[in-house]
Amino acid sequence: MSEKQASALIEGAIQADVVIVGAGPCGLFQIFELGLLGIHAHIVDSLKHPGGQCSELYPEKPIYDIPALPVCGAQELIDRLLEQTKPFNAQFHMGQEVTELHRLEDQTFLIRTSLDTRFHSKTVIIAGGLGSFQPRKLGVEASEAFEGRNVHYKVKSAAEFTGKRLVIFGGGDSALDWTLEFAGKARSLTLVHRRPEFRAAPASVAKMRDLAASGSMNYLEAIPHSLMTEGEQFKGVRVKRTDGAVEEIEADHALAFFGLHPKLGPIAQWGLTIDKRAIQVDTEKFQTNIPGVFAVGDINTYPGKKKLILSGFHEAALAAFAVAAHLNPAKKVALQYTTTSPIMHKRLGVADR
Image (cartoon, rainbow, N blue to C red; front, top):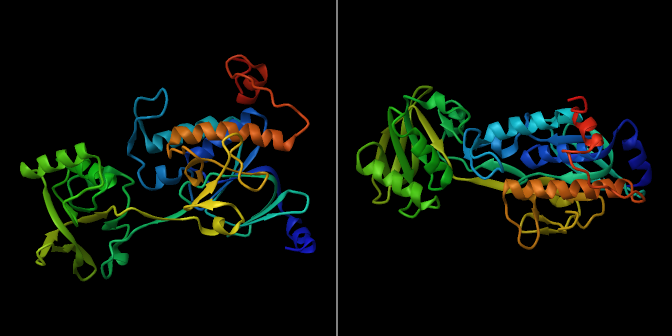
């Protein structure tokens, strides 16, 4: 991009100290950590609401490894994180994907989204989770016409499936978790998996087999074959068993949990060092190969990386200090504690308590 082109695009762009790409749990906690250091953030996400995978794929799934919360629903975690960000008035730009990132001659960045929102930012933090992702589809004719009505790739509210006839496809944790969740609550329940081996937790598989043996649910080794329909009405699914026979399963809803297609999308074109669809960072600043661009959460990789939310929270804390140092290289970033620091209390809005 020429200097003339950059200047034209910068005109009218939103001026920012930092733009966070991704509004999942790590991106939301990044707002908080930056806010403690007095840094105001803009945050962009392709989804229409904050929360990332937690909100989009498993909002009611329990999480057990968040410090001080023995159990926390995925959406509950997002709601708590959003509440925690409130004192810092971050500006959310939802429903738009960051499509362009250009490093300018003055070492700042021009960022552009799919809605042509433009930012001129001093730093960038990529918190994009797995990147752009789409669920693997059921893969049978006409299933797209019933998506969101009778064919589902996520569960937003378990209550809407209570008392219904359900068929669940998949052999991973999501498929088994929802099978166990709906057992005893659904009018009828069938789990379909293509082979006897599962990718889910062995304890979950054992519970499922016990339920099937007791007649509380059905289990079939088969693959999706076709939908059963009557006009525009969904009646169930046909599956092809391992012996080649086609079996009909009457159902009100089909839920498929075949995993995701994780793709970096436009991020792959930004000149970052990529290793197996993840962005390489250092472990001091969580900075990428481009000075001023940082990456936290599942989108990054480094020796010993563990893809855990709590690890992403740690990365966000260190990245915030690195951003502060990048913005003001001549000023030492002091470590202050939220329990005792008057400055922190003021930023948190609790100074008078």
